[in-house]
Image 1 (spheres, rainbow, N blue to C red):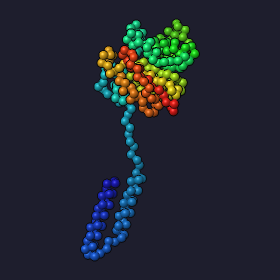
Image 2 (spheres, rainbow, N blue to C red; image 1 turned 90 degrees about the horizontal axis):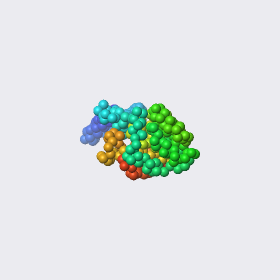
Image 3 (cartoon, rainbow, N blue to C red; image 1 turned 45 degrees about the vertical axis):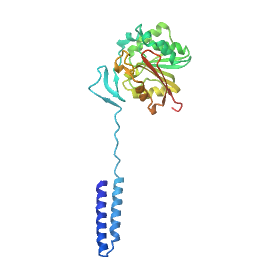
Image 4 (cartoon, rainbow, N blue to C red; image 1 turned 90 degrees about the vertical axis):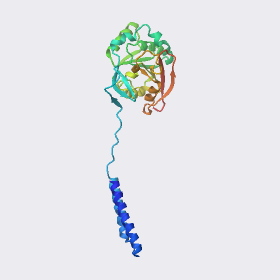
Length: 278
């Protein structure tokens, strides 16, 4: 409409200027009302444009789907990566394998977490609870560890272990695909070991986990290093450090990268801290 109006105004103005040139040749003056008519016409058109409703700008969807994808993936993509399939509770024996300490050095991982007595921590995607119980020892009887999983069967396996060891400082939490079900501002640390790349709704979970941290609280990602081709894990179950940082450092989460530890044989430990303002 603006183009048509400008063209009309231009044609009208051209007609006036052409008439004016002829007027000068014939010593006749341009009528004042003609120029006023053009200005009034242009102003009216501008008002019409101002009254038109704004055009809505469509935002790109947060998640996309593809039929051609990794057979171990969901076909759902987030920020350029495919989300992996969740390991079923039937895979719990793999979490309990005797060689896991040698391959992953869980004792070193727990040391890197630097948990203190009386702190409150969460093991997100706790599975059968191997790391949960190690964390429980670190925070002591007056501390608390929340073992979060979306599979009740995993929590049942962990409950049996806790009963046998008489560990009373672990709470079992059945989360959902979008929420760990943890109260805001309650955690000193939240840990995800080989879990984040499987989250069905990573954005929603990140928002909830960030909210669950106290100011200065830490969110820790442990993921197999995709940068290292020697790590004998399927690609979809590995993550680049840069990808983790891109997803975690979105401003609405209020998280700041603090450190990346590469002390483990196959995984990087990527630590973020919640700002005091959030």
